[in-house]
Image 1 (spheres, rainbow, N blue to C red):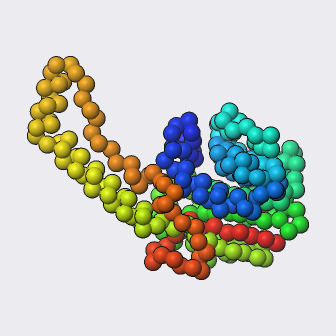
Image 2 (spheres, one colour; image 1 turned 90 degrees about the vertical axis):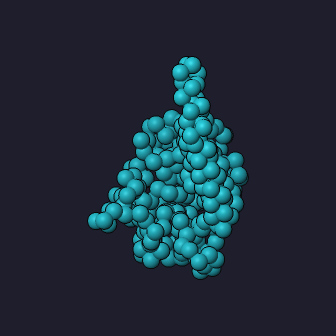
Length: 262
Protein backbone atom coordinates (compact mmCIF):
# COMPACT_ATOMS: atom_id res chain seq x y z
CA UNK A 1 0.00 0.00 0.00
CA UNK A 2 1.60 3.32 -1.03
CA UNK A 3 2.11 5.99 1.60
CA UNK A 4 -0.83 8.37 1.37
CA UNK A 5 -3.71 9.48 3.54
CA UNK A 6 -7.19 8.54 2.43
CA UNK A 7 -10.77 9.22 3.43
CA UNK A 8 -11.73 5.72 2.35
CA UNK A 9 -9.41 3.91 4.78
CA UNK A 10 -9.91 6.51 7.56
CA UNK A 11 -6.23 7.53 7.64
CA UNK A 12 -7.37 11.00 6.56
CA UNK A 13 -9.04 11.49 9.93
CA UNK A 14 -5.75 10.85 11.76
CA UNK A 15 -3.35 12.86 9.63
CA UNK A 16 -5.56 15.58 8.18
CA UNK A 17 -4.65 18.43 10.56
CA UNK A 18 -0.94 17.84 10.05
CA UNK A 19 -1.16 17.68 6.26
CA UNK A 20 -3.82 20.33 5.69
CA UNK A 21 -1.78 22.85 7.68
CA UNK A 22 0.76 22.74 4.85
CA UNK A 23 -1.99 23.34 2.28
CA UNK A 24 -3.27 26.18 4.46
CA UNK A 25 0.24 27.62 4.33
CA UNK A 26 0.20 27.37 0.51
CA UNK A 27 -3.34 28.75 0.08
CA UNK A 28 -2.50 32.51 0.16
CA UNK A 29 -0.01 31.99 -2.65
CA UNK A 30 -2.74 30.22 -4.68
CA UNK A 31 -5.65 32.66 -4.26
CA UNK A 32 -6.85 33.81 -7.68
CA UNK A 33 -4.07 31.82 -9.38
CA UNK A 34 -3.77 28.87 -11.75
CA UNK A 35 -2.41 26.06 -9.58
CA UNK A 36 -0.76 22.73 -10.33
CA UNK A 37 -0.84 20.35 -7.35
CA UNK A 38 1.96 17.97 -8.34
CA UNK A 39 1.75 14.63 -6.58
CA UNK A 40 -1.78 15.35 -5.38
CA UNK A 41 -2.45 11.83 -4.04
CA UNK A 42 -6.08 11.34 -3.09
CA UNK A 43 -6.92 14.96 -3.89
CA UNK A 44 -8.02 16.38 -0.54
CA UNK A 45 -5.41 19.15 -0.75
CA UNK A 46 -6.25 20.05 -4.33
CA UNK A 47 -9.91 20.33 -3.33
CA UNK A 48 -8.94 22.47 -0.34
CA UNK A 49 -7.06 24.93 -2.57
CA UNK A 50 -9.91 24.99 -5.09
CA UNK A 51 -12.38 25.82 -2.33
CA UNK A 52 -10.07 28.46 -0.80
CA UNK A 53 -10.03 30.76 -3.82
CA UNK A 54 -7.65 29.39 -6.43
CA UNK A 55 -8.76 30.34 -9.95
CA UNK A 56 -8.17 26.77 -11.06
CA UNK A 57 -6.45 23.69 -9.66
CA UNK A 58 -5.06 20.78 -11.63
CA UNK A 59 -4.11 17.79 -9.49
CA UNK A 60 -1.68 15.35 -11.06
CA UNK A 61 -0.62 11.96 -9.74
CA UNK A 62 0.74 8.72 -11.15
CA UNK A 63 -1.57 6.44 -9.14
CA UNK A 64 -4.86 5.32 -10.69
CA UNK A 65 -6.08 4.28 -7.24
CA UNK A 66 -5.43 7.70 -5.72
CA UNK A 67 -6.94 9.53 -8.67
CA UNK A 68 -10.00 7.30 -8.55
CA UNK A 69 -10.66 8.36 -4.97
CA UNK A 70 -9.97 12.01 -5.82
CA UNK A 71 -12.46 12.03 -8.69
CA UNK A 72 -15.13 10.27 -6.65
CA UNK A 73 -14.92 12.51 -3.62
CA UNK A 74 -13.89 15.98 -4.75
CA UNK A 75 -15.71 17.97 -7.41
CA UNK A 76 -15.47 21.69 -8.06
CA UNK A 77 -15.92 23.66 -11.25
CA UNK A 78 -12.33 24.94 -10.89
CA UNK A 79 -10.80 21.52 -10.13
CA UNK A 80 -9.65 18.65 -12.31
CA UNK A 81 -7.44 15.59 -11.86
CA UNK A 82 -5.17 14.05 -14.46
CA UNK A 83 -2.74 11.16 -14.53
CA UNK A 84 0.93 11.85 -15.06
CA UNK A 85 4.47 11.41 -13.76
CA UNK A 86 5.64 14.53 -11.93
CA UNK A 87 9.21 13.72 -12.98
CA UNK A 88 8.11 14.02 -16.62
CA UNK A 89 5.77 17.00 -16.63
CA UNK A 90 6.81 18.02 -20.14
CA UNK A 91 5.43 14.71 -21.44
CA UNK A 92 1.93 15.18 -19.95
CA UNK A 93 -0.09 16.33 -22.97
CA UNK A 94 -3.25 17.46 -21.13
CA UNK A 95 -1.51 19.52 -18.45
CA UNK A 96 -2.66 22.80 -20.09
CA UNK A 97 -0.03 25.02 -18.48
CA UNK A 98 1.57 27.35 -17.76
CA UNK A 99 0.66 27.83 -14.11
CA UNK A 100 1.07 30.64 -11.62
CA UNK A 101 1.81 28.28 -8.73
CA UNK A 102 3.11 24.73 -8.47
CA UNK A 103 2.43 23.01 -5.15
CA UNK A 104 4.37 19.87 -4.22
CA UNK A 105 3.80 18.75 -0.63
CA UNK A 106 5.27 15.59 0.92
CA UNK A 107 6.08 14.15 -2.50
CA UNK A 108 9.70 15.05 -3.16
CA UNK A 109 11.02 12.30 -0.88
CA UNK A 110 9.25 9.69 -3.01
CA UNK A 111 11.00 10.68 -6.23
CA UNK A 112 14.03 8.94 -7.66
CA UNK A 113 15.00 12.11 -9.56
CA UNK A 114 13.67 15.15 -7.65
CA UNK A 115 15.82 17.56 -9.67
CA UNK A 116 14.02 16.36 -12.80
CA UNK A 117 10.70 17.34 -11.21
CA UNK A 118 12.05 20.76 -10.18
CA UNK A 119 13.25 21.47 -13.69
CA UNK A 120 9.83 20.50 -15.07
CA UNK A 121 8.05 22.59 -12.45
CA UNK A 122 10.20 25.60 -13.30
CA UNK A 123 9.24 25.23 -16.98
CA UNK A 124 5.54 25.05 -16.09
CA UNK A 125 5.59 28.30 -14.11
CA UNK A 126 4.50 31.47 -15.85
CA UNK A 127 6.85 34.43 -15.46
CA UNK A 128 7.19 35.23 -11.77
CA UNK A 129 5.51 32.00 -10.73
CA UNK A 130 5.89 30.35 -7.33
CA UNK A 131 6.75 26.83 -6.20
CA UNK A 132 5.56 25.82 -2.72
CA UNK A 133 7.26 22.57 -1.75
CA UNK A 134 7.71 20.56 1.44
CA UNK A 135 9.58 17.45 2.52
CA UNK A 136 10.33 15.63 5.80
CA UNK A 137 13.33 16.91 7.70
CA UNK A 138 16.16 14.54 6.82
CA UNK A 139 18.09 15.61 9.93
CA UNK A 140 15.71 13.57 12.09
CA UNK A 141 15.05 10.69 9.70
CA UNK A 142 14.80 7.28 11.34
CA UNK A 143 17.46 4.99 9.85
CA UNK A 144 18.73 1.46 10.46
CA UNK A 145 22.26 0.55 11.47
CA UNK A 146 23.44 0.80 7.88
CA UNK A 147 22.00 4.30 7.46
CA UNK A 148 19.04 3.19 5.34
CA UNK A 149 15.79 5.15 5.74
CA UNK A 150 13.31 3.03 7.68
CA UNK A 151 10.28 4.41 5.84
CA UNK A 152 10.00 1.99 2.89
CA UNK A 153 8.20 4.56 0.73
CA UNK A 154 10.88 7.25 0.93
CA UNK A 155 13.70 7.21 -1.60
CA UNK A 156 15.62 10.05 0.07
CA UNK A 157 15.11 12.77 2.65
CA UNK A 158 16.78 16.18 2.85
CA UNK A 159 18.35 18.23 5.60
CA UNK A 160 17.84 21.99 5.46
CA UNK A 161 21.18 22.45 3.69
CA UNK A 162 20.56 19.63 1.23
CA UNK A 163 17.09 21.03 0.51
CA UNK A 164 18.61 24.43 -0.30
CA UNK A 165 21.20 22.84 -2.53
CA UNK A 166 18.52 20.89 -4.38
CA UNK A 167 16.29 23.93 -4.98
CA UNK A 168 18.82 26.69 -5.66
CA UNK A 169 19.91 25.60 -9.19
CA UNK A 170 16.28 26.01 -10.31
CA UNK A 171 15.09 28.97 -8.21
CA UNK A 172 17.10 32.03 -7.22
CA UNK A 173 14.86 33.19 -4.36
CA UNK A 174 14.11 30.81 -1.52
CA UNK A 175 12.21 31.29 1.72
CA UNK A 176 12.48 28.32 4.08
CA UNK A 177 10.00 27.42 6.80
CA UNK A 178 9.65 24.60 9.29
CA UNK A 179 6.65 22.73 10.62
CA UNK A 180 7.32 22.10 14.29
CA UNK A 181 5.59 19.98 16.88
CA UNK A 182 4.33 22.34 19.55
CA UNK A 183 4.50 22.00 23.35
CA UNK A 184 0.76 21.29 23.16
CA UNK A 185 1.56 18.18 21.10
CA UNK A 186 4.00 16.97 23.75
CA UNK A 187 1.47 17.57 26.54
CA UNK A 188 -1.34 15.83 24.64
CA UNK A 189 0.72 12.75 23.77
CA UNK A 190 2.09 12.52 27.31
CA UNK A 191 -1.46 12.62 28.70
CA UNK A 192 -2.71 10.03 26.23
CA UNK A 193 0.23 7.71 26.96
CA UNK A 194 -0.49 7.86 30.69
CA UNK A 195 -4.19 7.25 30.05
CA UNK A 196 -3.32 4.28 27.82
CA UNK A 197 -1.09 2.82 30.54
CA UNK A 198 -3.90 3.15 33.10
CA UNK A 199 -6.39 1.46 30.76
CA UNK A 200 -3.94 -1.40 30.17
CA UNK A 201 -3.45 -1.88 33.91
CA UNK A 202 -7.22 -2.14 34.32
CA UNK A 203 -7.76 -4.38 31.30
CA UNK A 204 -5.05 -6.88 32.28
CA UNK A 205 -5.82 -6.89 36.01
CA UNK A 206 -6.68 -10.28 37.58
CA UNK A 207 -10.30 -9.26 38.13
CA UNK A 208 -10.82 -8.24 34.50
CA UNK A 209 -9.04 -11.37 33.21
CA UNK A 210 -11.40 -13.53 35.30
CA UNK A 211 -14.41 -11.53 34.08
CA UNK A 212 -13.45 -12.01 30.43
CA UNK A 213 -12.84 -15.72 30.95
CA UNK A 214 -16.32 -16.06 32.45
CA UNK A 215 -17.92 -14.20 29.55
CA UNK A 216 -16.12 -16.41 27.03
CA UNK A 217 -17.44 -19.52 28.77
CA UNK A 218 -20.94 -18.07 28.42
CA UNK A 219 -20.30 -17.30 24.73
CA UNK A 220 -20.52 -13.56 25.22
CA UNK A 221 -18.26 -11.02 23.49
CA UNK A 222 -15.46 -9.22 25.30
CA UNK A 223 -14.06 -5.77 24.72
CA UNK A 224 -10.77 -5.75 22.79
CA UNK A 225 -7.57 -4.59 24.50
CA UNK A 226 -6.84 -0.85 24.50
CA UNK A 227 -4.96 0.61 21.53
CA UNK A 228 -2.73 3.65 21.54
CA UNK A 229 -2.98 5.85 18.45
CA UNK A 230 -2.08 9.23 19.94
CA UNK A 231 1.17 9.72 18.03
CA UNK A 232 -0.45 9.01 14.69
CA UNK A 233 -3.32 11.42 15.26
CA UNK A 234 -2.96 15.17 14.76
CA UNK A 235 -4.90 18.24 15.84
CA UNK A 236 -4.59 21.88 14.70
CA UNK A 237 -2.72 22.92 17.85
CA UNK A 238 -0.13 20.13 17.47
CA UNK A 239 1.96 21.87 14.81
CA UNK A 240 3.13 25.35 13.86
CA UNK A 241 4.69 26.56 10.60
CA UNK A 242 7.26 29.32 11.10
CA UNK A 243 10.33 30.67 9.28
CA UNK A 244 13.36 28.45 9.76
CA UNK A 245 15.32 31.50 10.88
CA UNK A 246 12.90 31.98 13.78
CA UNK A 247 14.05 28.76 15.50
CA UNK A 248 11.00 29.10 17.70
CA UNK A 249 11.49 25.75 19.49
CA UNK A 250 14.61 24.04 20.84
CA UNK A 251 13.85 20.90 18.83
CA UNK A 252 14.07 20.51 15.04
CA UNK A 253 11.01 20.77 12.77
CA UNK A 254 9.42 17.60 11.40
CA UNK A 255 8.97 19.09 7.94
CA UNK A 256 10.81 21.72 5.90
CA UNK A 257 8.87 23.93 3.49
CA UNK A 258 10.10 26.34 0.84
CA UNK A 259 8.53 29.13 -1.16
CA UNK A 260 10.57 29.44 -4.35
CA UNK A 261 10.66 32.02 -7.11
CA UNK A 262 12.80 32.32 -10.25
